[in-house]
Image (cartoon, rainbow, N blue to C red; front, top):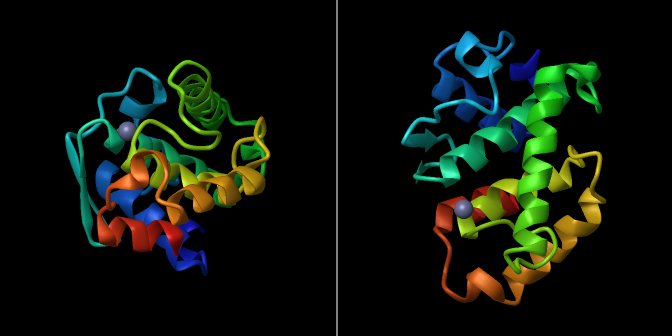
Length: 163
Ligand SMILES: [Zn+2]
């Protein structure tokens, strides 16, 4: 059901997620069920044609999980504990980046993490946030080359995120 999404961006996220987990995401592998105690891969090759490595891998996978989970189970993840834990964890991380890290609203951590989270905001996949409004703020940030976007982002990653 996930692979049937018509949006290329969502398909790509589902693809990244599947590639990272190397099996169908209809079935959450055992090693992911203990989330947030998950060991993320060091690098992933994103279907958008770019490589993600280091800390942003976790952000890309969390974002992919939420988008894929929402597609599969509905807006509130069908109340599934696993997805709700990912949702709450990512929300807390984004809020910490704003309140303690001085990140502009909606931005998170660094360029790659912000570009990964933009898709989640646009899908309104975090119930605690006004996602679409924050997504507009983030797009403005990118367009105005503010904050971390003073320096150019990876072109393919940017193209994928702005989709
Ligand atoms: Zn980051």
